[in-house]
Length: 445
Image 1 (cartoon, one colour):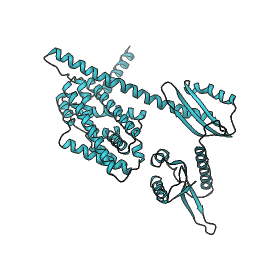
Image 2 (spheres, helix red, strand yellow):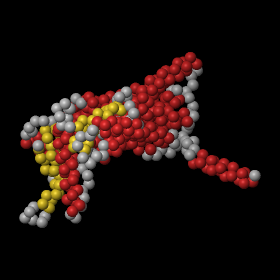
Image 3 (cartoon, one colour):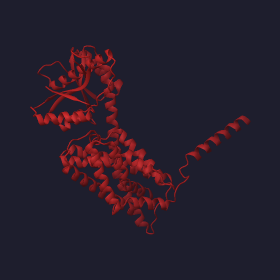
Image 4 (cartoon, helix red, strand yellow):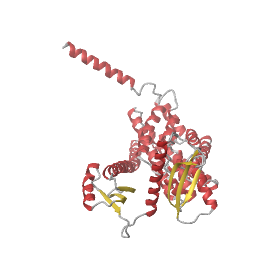
């Protein structure tokens, strides 16, 4: 009996200690102070408006020259977090006036941001889509998690008596500014896919910051706004509920689509890696097509042809990889009945030859191993649409009459048309900059 009593006292002490350590009410600011602070930060006029414009220009330049440090600096300057948190706060305390004000200011800030970035990308002499910009065209499941967790950290920091660097950190993590600049680039370059993808990422980030703000405000039991006219209060509550449903339901569906697509692609990559591991047959191209009702895995094989029975057995094992509703399409055999991309075959073979040659030479010499080259396929396609394929590798060049040797990055590429010397120089300069190589040898097929 005494032992049981001691154990209960111990668990009670542990529970009290844990509750004290994780108590969000400690150091919490007054509700009115928090509301006034967030309301003030959600306004866009005077200094806030000019700060936003300057931050947009800085972020656009950072994306244009592919400078991560400049982009981070712009996100620290940006005041975009204010109206987004204002929307979440207004829903949490049933303040319809604050909801209208924050929504209006967010819309104005978004339009000004897109207009400013579009103006910059129209007048800049640099029109290449760098990797930092391309990364903001398609949201992933991690963007959803980062936005939600960042929003939680942001509103917790905003409700403290002593303000810290939480808000600037959240602004960097959730990346609200770069997607708007990317949308401006899409408008300036006429690429509507970039524009739509960037706005999609911005919308996802904004919505989940609002949701996390709403959750913390409700958890901390902020006092809701009361109205003398009960009818008006019911009307405001109804409007807020409608706005919340219209906003939250699509965002949850979009987030589900992003998560489902990421899971499908991970399962598909694992399936291809495990099931198509043959010594005489190689997968040279894989394409994962995601649709809500029908998903596809398209594979292009070279080498010894797989029998239909072997492919049927592989299809039966797709359920082990959670790919029950996925269609497997296999192209093999170089015949005219199948639509085979020969440029993809050639690029894959060249890349494999380069990789084997480089690994063989680096293992037989004492030269240091260079880091792997980055995948620049999407950037290459966006900047030079007339490029059919490319293969890149670091190669060691030796002179027969000398013991010296040089390491040169060799890029072999094929184009749909003949390119002039100016275009070749432009491609070579971009490759040298993007691959961070001392020298690049461009071989045109």
